[in-house]
Amino acid sequence: MRRNAKTLTVMLLTLLLCMAASCSIHGITNAQYNPVGGEANRTGYYEASPTTESYPDISSRKVRNVIFCIGDGMGLGQTTLARMKTTGANGVLHLERLPIVGIMRTHSANSLVTDSAASGTAMASGVKTNNGMIGMTPDGTKYQTILEATQAKGMTTGLVATSTITHATPAAFASHVKSRGMQGRIAEQLIANRVNIILGGGRQCFLPKSHPDSKRKDELNLIEEAEKAGYLYIQTPRELRTAQHTHVLGLFQVGPLTTTAPEPSLAELTAKAVSLLSQKAEDPNKPGFFLMIEGSQIDWACHHKDPTAAIRQTLLFDQAVKAAIDFARKDGHTLVVVTADHETGGLTITGGRLNGDKLSAKWSTGGHSTLPVPVYAYGPKANIFGGVYDNTAVAKRFAHVLGITSFPGKLRDRTGRELPLAGRGAK
Image (cartoon, rainbow, N blue to C red; front, side, top):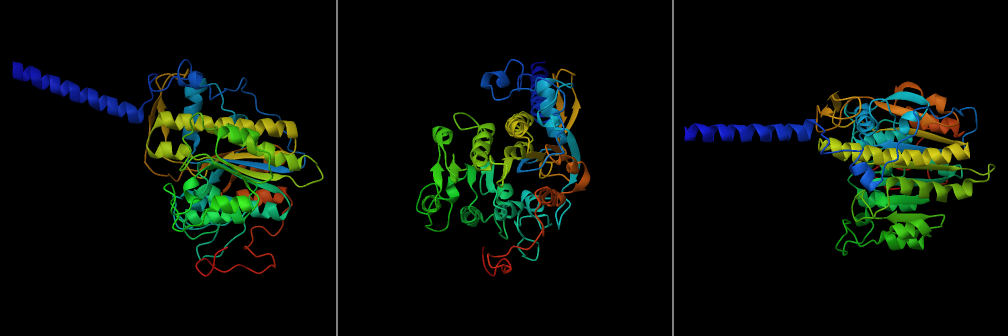
């Protein structure tokens, strides 16, 4: 009898452990995430939209500025889960209020399942490449990015990310390397390319090899080099608040950002970048700015099949979108486009209540998926981002609305000479 009781106890404990494991992967309970009375209110990081109405259409005006927001790994599953858990089934995220919606395909040149390097290159340069490659086609031909094209037009530029700023997506807009793993080289190119505002994590790729935090393979101190080149270097929230300069390098962590206080939030980084870039662009007769914002860690949460973290990172990204929209609505000549480089996890919401309680979510993979991703747009000429199209179309459409011709195009030096293939020289 005792033996049977002991066996039954073991079986019950095993069952409970299995149920708990299943819940942590597939389900979201109020104990894990409660935006009504728990984490959201306690941290104050998310301000829900007071209305479900779409932002007004102003597509007939001229585009002077572009803010491109990329939620890494963010598909419809991620936005739906974040919306349901935060506002219930009938609410909206800020990004869902953008009036124009499209669908974007994401495959790379060599795989149905893209990585961030290939997808970033497609969205930045308008050409397909193999997974792992940045700013060039599979044969090594370097292509100009939309950020570089706007620089040539006289516009100011910026990159903001919650990953290391040398990670695949931000790298795709201002560097050209045969492997995304060449983050030291990417860091050099970000500075050499004179991107005006660079905000994120990743001091490790800017410090010399002898520094204990460095991941470089040489003794180049890129922070010192950046300062010599005229950059203001900052690394604290206070320095961010007071920064007033045409070129700012802000590295707030050795590695990726923690996305927790007292570190500046993605929304704060976005608002500051917009403020700095728009100072030069206030005169309607002068060129505007191009800014790329990445919510990098939605992807990481989904790789770990962590629905709570996926919700939080999506909401943090949505707050950054709100900061971009707040500026665009006042400015009247700023195009805001929001999308993802790919979907991660094959996330599906399988049940729950209309108020967001008792939600259950399942994952089909721990990697990226082939699912197309949504595109949301607001502002002048936003209507051209409706429909179904390839990720290479995004940069081409940016070029079109900004009056940039001969895009996409091979990267050339200042004399107009085509730069050599990757491996035979570096930009």
